[in-house]
Image (tube, rainbow, N blue to C red; front, side):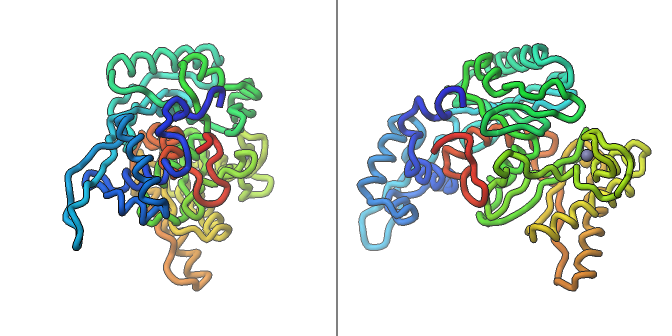
Length: 375
Ligand SMILES: [Zn+2]
């Protein structure tokens, strides 16, 4: 990050223990949670919990939500998160469109703007459009302080350094420090990640089973994956994980935008281009089956513009490929396939989670870990 972490100017948002408490407050929702329950679930002393919750209340992040009868003792005061106390911005820089979402602390979008974007054109135009749209959204929505902006765009890129690599179709971005450039333009802390990773991080927040593993497959102008393994987003050391689209499934096959041949992306996009949607779904299904074979994940989620144009066709096509795989292996039921929640905003909403998830201790669980913002 060019400056400190998103919460750095807010003492109450710093520290691992505060993140644990905030995470429990968020999970409890409107119903709230008592200090004793917070202590029991975090392993912190009641005194430590009281100190943290006092700071959260002083900053307006938590509030009393009434009293609840307790067995034997006096009624306990319960606390809840105040979702509207702070906002975060999620930016989806797609190849032809910019989506800007303003999210509250619960991750719910309170305002959204869209504008045409030519991501493959020059950086100056991309930065100017982004700056203009963020300013317009903040002026429209008003509201509480903004903690930072999460930026999601096509990869490959280096999440830790905030630098783009040779983006397919836009090689001139190679080496461009997009995170720092946007932080300067927006006057906010910025976290950069691949569109697929942002979407997967956002989808992981909705999982109730905590330690689950899934792949989010995104088919739009390109094809990529975001991987959540053991409850945590897996980026790999160089943010290279999830380059799902460039697995070769046909030796000496057609040329791919990446420079290789016979990549699953090239075959899938070619099928889409000739309106062969069953063919595209079948190719996607073969790729998904390879991924299930490799990682033994619990489910496959599909999203992206091309999928949204024909959701049943893609979900059914991929499900068929996974069912065929399960039959061949004799390994019980096929891995389920679903349309990812969030629709066309799955990436922008997930981008806001690049800022929000670490505040709730939710970004760094599992393999690989979240490394964008120190807790
Ligand atoms: Zn390729």
